[in-house]
Length: 248
Image (cartoon, rainbow, N blue to C red; front, side, top):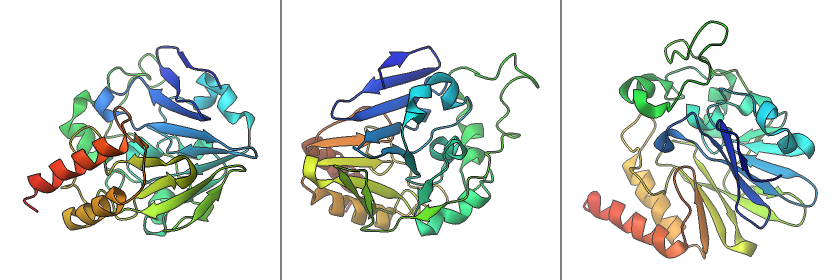
C-alpha cells in the first residue's frame, strides 16, 4: 500500500509494514484507527472504523492480500466496517455483539447524540436517502469467524502478535503485542485523550489492572486507537496520570 489522502480516507505509512487508515469524515477524537500490519503470508487489519464508506472504493490495495481482521472491541467506531472482511476475530466476551451490532452495545447511542461533533462532515450527504442519521444507523452484522482470547497468537508469516485481554474500556477489549519489535497496539485503553471509563461495560478497577499489565511490557512504540503514536515512557506517564486521577 501507499500513503495518500483523498479527503475522505487517509492512509499513513508507519514503516516496518504498518499502516494506519483514518476516516477523515470523523472528527479527530472520534476516529477509530484502522491499523494494518503485513507479514510474509497475510495481512492483519486491526479494527474497521465507522464503515460509512466502503474501504474497497478508496483503498483497493488493502484487499490485495489474504486478510485476518481483528476487532479489538465492539464499539461502533471500531467495527462499523468489519463486514467488509471475510475472516473476523474477536474476544469471546464480545462475539455476540458482532452477531447483532445494535445501537446500545456498540455505543452508537447515546454517544453520537451526546457528541454530535464526532462527525466532521457527512459522507452520505447527497446520496440516496439523504444524510447520516445516528438514530437510524445500523451496523451490518459481521459474525465472528474466530475467537481470540488472552495469549492467542496471530501468525502473519515472519511476524507474530500476541493477544492481550485488557478489559476496562469494554469487557472483551484486546490489545496486540509484537514482542520481537516491542510494538503495542493499545487501542482504547491508553491514548492521548480522555479514556471513556463510565460507559456501559467499562470498569475502572479492570482498567487500572490493565494499565499495570501494560506498564510491565517492554515497549518502544505504542499505536493507539485514537490520536498520535508515542513511546513506552509516554505510555507509562499516561497510565500514571490516570491512576492519580482515580486517587490510586
